[in-house]
Image: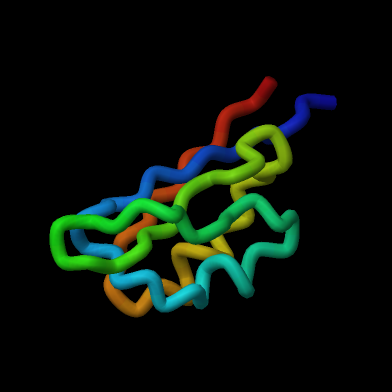
Length: 74
């Protein structure tokens, strides 16, 4: 049986660091970066990319549609 591996891409400039995606992630993949974007917000990023299963929970809760989720069979 093929295992699904996920990956996300965050549009750093659109992200306002609301932290909703970090809380929604069941695998605890996301975190807020210490660096800020050009607007001064700490944006989200994949802190633990190997744990991502591509469930899209982060993308569903993102109010600014900053997150794109990809799924790959491995």
